[in-house]
Length: 142
Length: 142
Image (tube, rainbow over all chains, first blue to last red; front, side):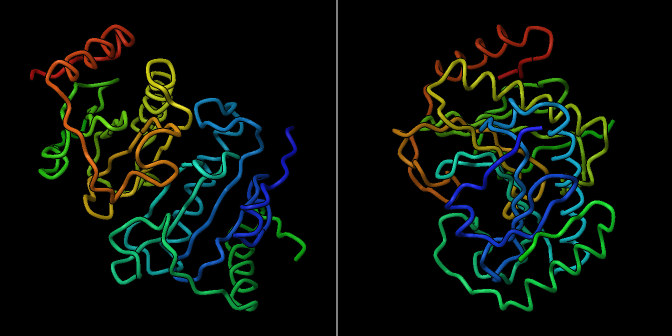
């Protein structure tokens, strides 16, 4: 298995929540929108180069997190994307959007507006994930 | 099979190129970046609700178009996304980006800058797709 190191910019911009089906799960440090990032275990930078097993896990994780956002947050639309213009390490954004979030209907990328999470909000997120994905989620040591 | 009608805004913003593995393939009317849009045959608006067969076709089409962009355009990074904040009909963007395109390193959504395609450029794109995807692509009647 490929072992990845989280890119320093991604690391600075997110909380590392844990592993979801063996892929790294991050939370963007902006509580204005619920915004997950999944990192497959690969050194490839493009989705179409990802090997089958990691792609299947990624698809599964996208679906799990989509359901999680719809169930636990006011999510009226999901935004799912792999961009990588600034950080080329492969990472997929899974974001819950609603009409009264401050960026709607625009996209979230390139926006400066930001609210920091409180420590207990991040802990609550990890608890929720642990509860929902009992056998699939392994939380990070904070 | 679900029959879809292309949303009027999507229709106005794009050229309908044809069907790729039975899914509608559009080209954004902006020649500044090579920008495809694929519409799965569904009335669902979220990827995780898409049925398995359409999802598999969509994954395949994303991969085919990714390779096509890398092979035929100056593509240094692919941007792949399903957003749908403005047009909720499910559609996936597959965009070839490079460091000297006018939006780099920003995202393409929400940008006003635009150059129209010439008719022969669109015809050339369809020819290229027909040549590359002989048995998978069926061109639209322009």
